[in-house]
Amino acid sequence: MDAAVGLKEVARRAGVSMRTVSNVVRGTGRFSEATRVRVMRAVEELGYRPNTAARRLRTGRSGVLLLAVPDLAMPYFAEMAGHLLDQAAAHGCTLLVEATGGRPEAELDIVLGRTDPLVDGVILSPLALDDTAAAPAARVPLVLLGERVHELPCPHVTIDNTAAAREATGHLLARSGRDIAVIGRQTVPYAVTSDTRLAGYRQALAEAGIAYDERFAPPVAAYHRADGAHAMRTLLDLPRPPAGVFCFADTLAEGALHALRERGLTAPGDMAVVGFDDVEEARFAAPPLTTVAPDKAELARLAVTALLDRIARPDDVPAAPAVLVAGHELVVRASA
Image 1: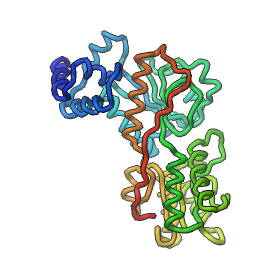
Image 2: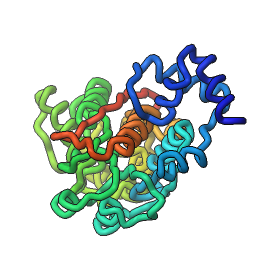
Image 3: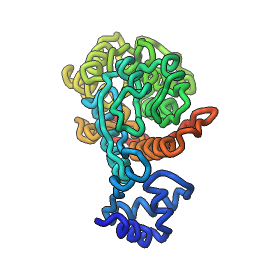
């Protein structure tokens, strides 16, 4: 499609000016959320893609963004990458994706700009980033994605993990009674997913007048299925196993369900199970998994829009980094 004609067609379909369309797809200028939605709907319906070669000549930017996540084998990160790819494409950008393995040195290299020189900016989901080392020398337009709110002068995109965990635990308490366990507690540095979700679990217990019992929170090394299965076996071996379990990731919940089946037990008959992330596998688990569903599309939109704004205004560094919060909901299925 010819870029100029396409721009006119998008403007006509959305009922706005060509300048407004250009601002929306480039993530620059001022426009309302309703206008952004109309323009992006028209972009999708018409299959419009900006002329990136012309933009590179005009602006000196490559239109290439980088997404760095800990592990693409984890379903949540794979699904988030898909949403971010869609958002980048809607803005006429190319998104490169790489896995850091959660290694602090790899995450620091990205923040310090030791990446492909064609990259205009980075969306990073860090596990072990050292703010002290990164803050004085950060050189690349950066948006952080995940639970931990960093001290770096860049936008941070997240959901309210503590509130989400409190809701999930409250659902289990209402359904299954007092003995509710968690799978996902970690004791390593920067275990912020664990910390924020454990805080929500403990808040729900306190609101119900229940004391926190660490026996009902076995530690895990990682958030893989094997870790969930091992933790569930630990819980099942207690003199009085819990009536329900809140898992801090759907992968942990899948492992927990596997361990229940090993013992000839069922969910929710013998133990209710709730997960977190609402990855596609959760819908097809046996039984289908009740889980917290972050608004992944909104997380991706906020992250890409914030990054393009930083790229367009590199010298406009706020005194305090913006924390952009997407929504979430508890999706109730058969497991709890």
